[in-house]
Amino acid sequence: MKKSFFLLLLFPLFSMSIIAQEAIKSEDFIVDPPTYRSLAFRWIIEGDENLNSTVLVQYRKKDAKDWKFALPLTRIDGDMVNREYNPFKTGNLFSGSILQLEPATLYEVQLKLFDVDGVYSEKTVEVSTRSPEENFKPQKVLHLYPENYPGEIVEPAYTDLNEMLYKLTGGTLVIIHPGTYYGTYEFLIGGSRNNPIILRGSPEGEAIFDGKNTDGKIFDVSGKSYIHFENITIRNGYTAIKGNDANGIVVKNCTIFDVHYGIISFTKTRNWVIANNHIMGRVDDWSNRDRVKDKFGTCTGVIIDGVGHVVCYNTVHDFWDCVTISNLEEPEPWYEPHNMCIDFYNNNLYNAADDCIETDFGYYNIRVWNNKLTNSHVGISTQPVYGGPVYIFRNAVYNVKIPLKLHNWPSGLLIFNNTFVSSERAFWSDPIWQNAKIMNNLFLGAQSYTVATGSPDERTILDYNGYCRVPGQEKMFKWSTDNRKTWFRLSNLTEFYKETGHEAHGTMVDYDIFNNITVPIEGTTYDPAKIDLNLSGKGNAINAGLYIPNIADDFMGTAPDLGCNEFGTPLPHYGQYSGFNY
Image 1 (cartoon, helix red, strand yellow):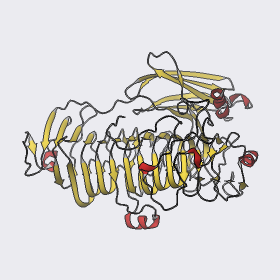
Image 2 (tube, one colour):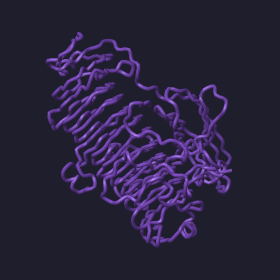
Image 3 (cartoon, helix red, strand yellow):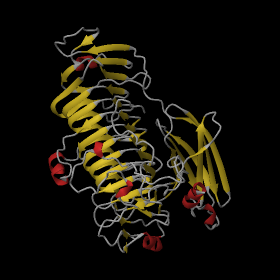
Image 4 (cartoon, helix red, strand yellow):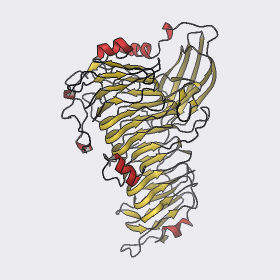
């Protein structure tokens, strides 16, 4: 029953009045670039001013028998985003993803467009997820050794990477033998998707590139595509790797530390992979935000820009921001999307003076899941999102002042099955977010209101979430639908539902839903390894959620549990580890 109720709740097609000349007209159907774990689609339309259409999505592996439901595509319909700073009008379309798929796998996808005004259209496509960039057969192999290397030398061999750069061609594998290499390096040529240039540390021992405290880049691959960095250490410089105007950059199984910037690009690129790395910044007191900004500026672990990027299984800490999408001064129009089809998953991010994850300036199909965020000012930021959807699900967030920063009129937010434990208010943001669905989450705070935010958008749905009352706090909810002109201040879920229509199925929880989690103390630094947000089996979070296809559809009891992890199932692995697989 809850499965069908999900569709009725989010897409009440048959309860809306029919208005003449508002029938939908199907225009362009677009299959967007896949990643290892996600597929993405856009369906551009005309009409449907009464918003009574939807696109249902089913999928299966090629030649499999049974179809599975994915989430319906998100309806985007001309919202004004970022109104005060750089106004942006979204288009008239549907957009959405199929999530948590297997890499290098062919899927059949069926999309059905329904409009109550009498229009039906169907698309069936075969689409493959992306294959990992592995198992290349090199065209030539070169060896890099430190000076005075004590072991056997395999030819052709070099002791200076800058000299070797002149010898590189597409398909070259460089084996880097143990030792420390001092200097900075600007690549002269790139590879291709099938013949990349690979710098790979030898399994004999650690290969270290020391930038000698350069105020520039240790590795500059700008304008040079398909260069891979594997199993090396990069340290002691302003920027470890910079790759403006470079596609197909891969950084995998590396250690980067003592840097201002880790891995960055500020121009539109495609198909970067940043996976299973340990990236450490220079911030020494994340909680003193003003001091960090004065001393370190906006230092960042990972900055990406463009389409088709994957940032997964990284441990990133001690920066202003851990991982972000690059800011856009002048965004392209909705039909020329800049940042889209980007995955952030299974990362362990902590000690961020500002944000752990920024999806800011994302357009369509930004996916954030299975991340662990600890000790930061902000958990996940969406200021702004240009229509979305941005999928935020199954994230474990602890000791974060502002778990969700939904500023600057973002539109298209799907926030499901996360656990947010704040050292201040569990859900605080400017009350101006639009076209959002927030369900199956846990919100636990330590100060003031549990919820202090709001949405002016009638399409927004807030339901099936669990909330913890701050001890001694009379009012739980502070809610505005008119950008702070007026506020509801409400004591409990019953009042909140009566005044706003939200949380008909919300529930109250307390810290006993966890095994050994306590209320976080503001300004305290907690060891992420000791934070376990798995459910204890006690309290009201068990079986209290709603079936959500492709996200909360594999539950153990009568309904999904609230929060980031179903009770009785192991937590996912967060961050760099030896058993890494995409």
